[in-house]
Image 1 (cartoon, rainbow, N blue to C red):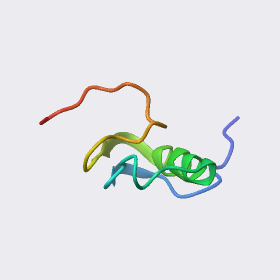
Image 2 (cartoon, helix red, strand yellow):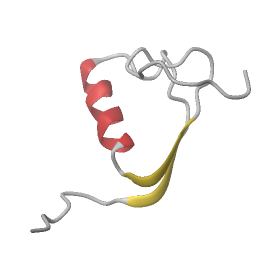
Image 3 (cartoon, rainbow, N blue to C red):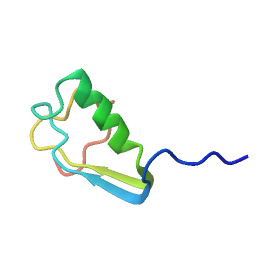
Length: 63
């Protein structure tokens, strides 16, 4: 049984400026979760400065 998706999904998603100065509140955390779950195959996150504390420890490329 396949359940229908409850929102748009994309093959790839790029989320710009996932920094600690942008994503700070609980509502921001919820929005970040929603936007991160839209990518079906590839998710790219870009952070200007320090990454948001809502992100788990991930490999940082290009630092």
